[in-house]
Amino acid sequence: MDWFTAPDLWLSRLLFQRSLAVIYVVAFLGAALQFRALIGERGMLPVPRFVERVPFRRAPSVFHRHYSDRFFAAWAWTGCAVSVALVAGVDSLLPLWAGMLLWLVPWAMYLSIVNVGQTWYSFGWESLLLEVGFLAVFLGNDEVGPPVVVLFLLRWVLFRVEFGAGLIKMRGDECWRRLTCLDHHHETQPMPGPLSWFFHHLPKPFHRVEVAANHVTQLVVPFLLFAPQPVATAAASLMIATQLWLVLSGNFAWLNWITIVLALSAVDFGTTAPRTPGPPLWYTIVVLAVAALVLWLSYHPVRNMISRRQVMNRSFDPLHLVNTYGAFGSVSRVRYEVVVEGTADDVPREDSAWREYEFKGKPGDPRRWPRQFAPYHLRLDWLMWFAALSPAYAGSWFGALVERLLENDRDTLRLLRRSPFPADAPPRFVRARLFRYRYTTWRELRETGACWERTYVREFLPPTRLARSPARNP
Image 1 (cartoon, rainbow, N blue to C red):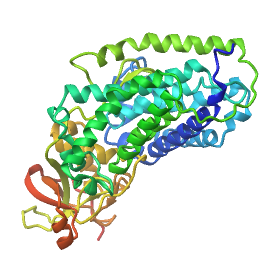
Image 2: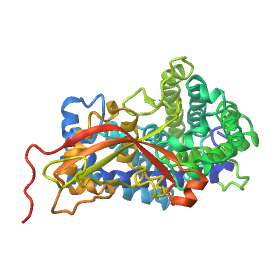
Image 3: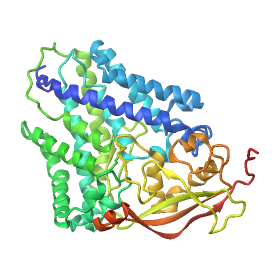
Image 4: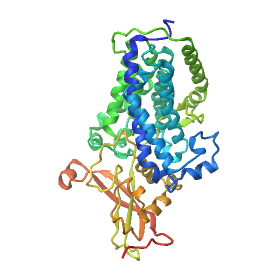
């Protein structure tokens, strides 16, 4: 069975497994801290309503059998605890079969969350975590060498992530073909990071080089992942360097980090392999069966990838086992932001004392510099970016957000950086306005200290109040 394992890649497996477990921790932590306002019993898109209209077969989840906020919280925190155990290497202390079952637990638990998360969990990195997490179940532990078949399946995922993203760029916005997309992207991306302003102000010729290098990394280098070593290691290392560049330039939750983790599984660190016994027959059969299943399920993702009508971030099965990926097929030239404000006045007027709600990650106050949040995912902030692109993206939840703000809902306010109203005195009215944001120039930054300059565009939501305002404390 020498062909079945690659003992020299034991360190690659170790780094992959521990790093993936860290991403699981981040994912479960975000679910535990944000779910009440988003999908809780009184959330903007409550799970109980969702499971009433969507059958189990379309979205398998434990929450079809039972849901309460207390149960969801226990579920998410348990997922955190199991993931921490995997970070600590508990799976290596167990028999092979038990270690595999331990890895299966966070995958099944997070699947239950994603399948009821609705638009809050519709991002490509959710499906990517589930697909990679499923394959991690079959990587084994210290009892066996890393199975070659699973390592190549991980490279197959990485290939689809990178090559799919490259194809959708070339088929999409013409600025990718003209090498000009990065003239705008750092300014208009969903959630800028602390260095994004500086990336935007790099010389335009350098932006052309960035785009060209991106095309090479996504359209050429992925094929080298399946070449013999050390070529595969060089290809994976180049992908890691590219992803680290993206980490520095923006906040993309754990998309960049899980891509780096995938690439680690292809790197040969040249370490001496520890002695391991041959794999048991049952393990070999299970791994080969999983490989056959993945190859069979790859039909639709591959067909989508080669289609002229390629779509981004699509799951073709309810378990998210094999998916299609892609990002930024088009790039916005102008940045718009929805600014949410409230007033305590009984009659809302333009000259009323409107006070602005501050979000944690999305741009607001022009003088407030962006912070680094990735790999943590600020779900409301991301959806606010989509809302600014088109009100249609916010149709299912924005009204509920305004209602919660009018109630000074504690769980909703925890998603924000700051509310301008005290807990016992909610606003009488809330409105939303659309602004155009642009980065300031070097001169403007020196003179004003502001990294953004914003201009009012139009009303997004007129002043709105509850049908029956909550009673105020005397």
